Length: 386
Image (cartoon, rainbow, N blue to C red; front, side, top):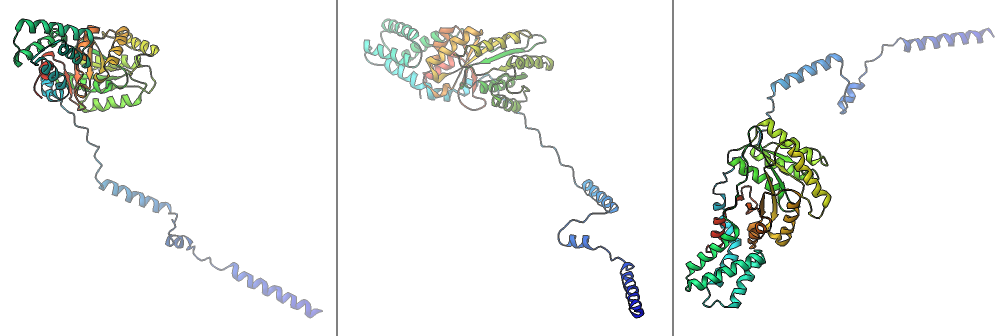
């Protein structure tokens, strides 16, 4: 029994001694971080290491050259309005020559009987001259041909030129009012239905005015289409004209008012206000157009209301013109896409119906293809040789 107790005591002592050896062993350094780094992991840096890395990064950043801001877009200098129509005569001739040369061929026939005169009248009507104007032209030509007797090509061309000019009205005032009035700019409202090129016309008109040495502010009052304001900003950016715009769906009248205010603050010569492309059958939208004009007039007089018409729409364009004339006092017509149709007679018909002159015509898609309308240049071009 005594031996057994003694053996147990010896075992316990030995166990305590052996366990104490492990308790007092020095801990080995933790190499897991290094191993993790070697395997592609990220070691946690000590504070001193972080500061060193930050100082090194700052030194590298200071050594690198600073990135230069992107260069500002180059401002274009558009050509002046003087002589634009002359420079674009070739484009006008390609479309309107069919109309002019057809009339000259009929008038130069050896025998002008009733059938020939009727064909001449049909040619005029087909070119959208209008029934009333076509009848007047034919009756006047028949009288003069009887009086003259002989008809040389030069005489025929002279007679037709005289009649077309009389119908177009070279005496009509066709200048666009762009000069400021004292401390306020000239204000131009541009109206028209969708698809006529109204917003594009605003941008091109700004180029015409700036090309003549004046300053322009553009008002993006077509708030129903965000693309319209973006398009206007593109046009304005090319020639350095600021654009006043608001979020899509904003009150168009407030945008127009702010644009005029900006023009007055900047001392600009002209403010061009682009309005929404309204369908002439939408009474509410047409009433809103009248509201835009009234709100502008609280700040300044509206000098021009230009109605943009697509020359290819013919009689439909004339109906649009009548409706717009009832809502706002239209002072001038802009005929776009005149290079794509032989129906230049729409100029005569629109002016006859509204008593409003065609002031500008569009003859292409280029930025400088908008030109002041000149009656004599127009008639001479359509009667020239192809």
